[in-house]
Amino acid sequence: MKRLGFLQSIHFKFALIYLLLILIAMQIIGVYFIGKLELRLVENFKVSLNERVNMLAFSIEQEMIKEREDTSSLEKDIRSILQDYESEDIQEIRVIDNKSRVIGSSDPYSQGIVGRKTNVDLVKRTLLLGDSLDGARLDDNNYNRLYVSSTPIRSNGDIIGAIYLIAKMENVYDDVKEINDIFVTGTGIAMAITAILGIFVAQTITRPISAMRKHVLELGRGNYSKKVKVFGHDEIGQLALTFNDLSKKIQDAQATTEGERRKLSSVLAHMTDGVIATDKKGRVILINKPAENMLDVPRETVLDQSIVSVLGLDEQYTFEQLVHDIDTEILDFSTHKKQYIIKVSFSVIKKESGFINGLIAVLYDVTEQEKIEGERREFVANVSHELRTPLTTMRSYLEALADGAWKDEKIAPQFLHVTQTETERMIRLVNDLLQLSKLDSTDYRFSKDLVDFTKYFHRIIDRFEMTKDQQVSFVRNFSSKAIYLEIDQDKITQVLDNIISNALKYSPEGGTVTFKVQESNGEIIISVSDEGVGIPKENVNRIFDRFYRVDKARTRKLGGTGLGLAIAKEMVVAHGGRIWAESEEGIGTTVFFTLPIEENQEGLEDDWDEV
Image 1 (spheres, rainbow, N blue to C red):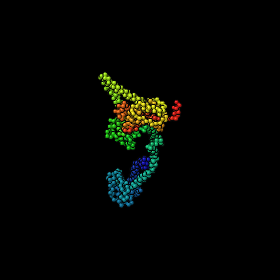
Image 2: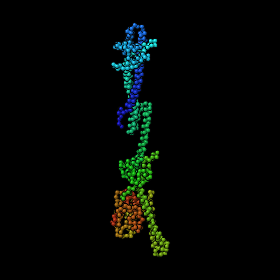
Image 3: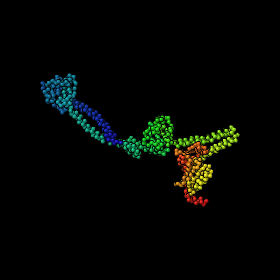
Image 4: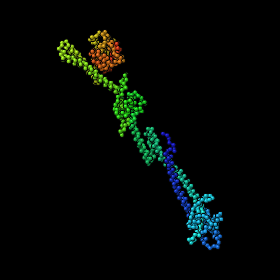
């Protein structure tokens, strides 16, 4: 965060406001005080002059009522009296008789007006009305302020003259100015002291605020351990205590939130299902690793994109339709080489107010389920078909027998033979299905014995060689070395019977069936090869599926159920081995399977010899 300058800080603003308030208060007080002081000084000045004028009026009255032979002695006496009243403030005093004639002046430079009539309106009005009048004017020479007054001289109630006073007022205003200067100086001193005190007071307030500001910055960085220093027990101190308590609660809430976030992240990370979360506008804000793998998209490119486009549903739905109308959707990403199907379940995130805040999409890989479901449907269809065929045949022959064919000595035995053959075929099919069901059961147990597989394998081959009806040669391409295995002889016998039977079924007259046994990395590899028509390359891996036949018509003709190799696969896998086939059309097919070898063969061979 950008550092604040001093002029932008609350410290400066608080001190400035404090100073402005003091300055405004001082100015208001100063204006009021100086105004009142000026009025009082001017009033006192006038009162003082009027008192002196009144005393002068009494002295002039006494001189004017005396009996005199001529006026020259009066003017002399009046001038003598006026000299006693000269002062620094009084510029001139004139005495005028009731005929408006100036009979005396205190100004030596104005003696020329003595004996002349005055033209001052203020004096004329006083002589006419008998009132004391005053006023102010400016000096014509230096424009100083002057006070003028006209006071009547009375004798026995009659106006016998007037006294015209001209006084200087600059001394009064000089006093006011001096007092004002003193006040300004005092204001300046007070402002300086106030500024210092204001800065100190502002610091006592802003220091806790600055400390809280720094603490807020630390909170923004995730540091909740620091505490704000409490500087007092006032409101700011209470605020600091509240702030520290709030920080503690935020720290606890953050720890709780972080713990929940980690739990959620751990749950999302370890979920096998994909999860995608959006905001209220449908933009992806969260996607876990399984969802990335399922959709084969990088996290960086998916975030902030619309979930509709991420799921490839932009041509079918809008985000509003997903929110309001769609609960689940199946996404089929299958290709001609690989089946891949995803099921998406949608759940709306709502606030307490009921407004939609986003959408959660949970992705399930249902490829295996769909495959199993497809296999189940195919299995049911195949079982139904395999059972229906012999049942239909049996019904037809039994109906014919019921209609009277049993009386025919030639046809009846043939019909009964076909019915018996189809019945045996259904029994074999049901037995095979029951066996597969047992092998699928988790609690199925084998009865294993320690067997010399070489001798055991020779006995199986010998049995087929003695009972075969075809002109097929058997080639045993393995040594007579004893190899000891722990196996369930009945189940491995069934495996070999199924494999060898298939080899014989598809071997042409004069063909060869080759048997091999090889040791490799703790296991033996048994293979049975024929020289039949072979299996198309795209079908080789499917011959171990239940009810799968390359040539269905021929297999049914030969009496097969389509479950022999499927049963063989289950038994080999249950023994810890593997089974597979290799084939080339027109050349033949080889079926391989492995079984684990028992360790310490030498000791076992010695024990076997002793027995």
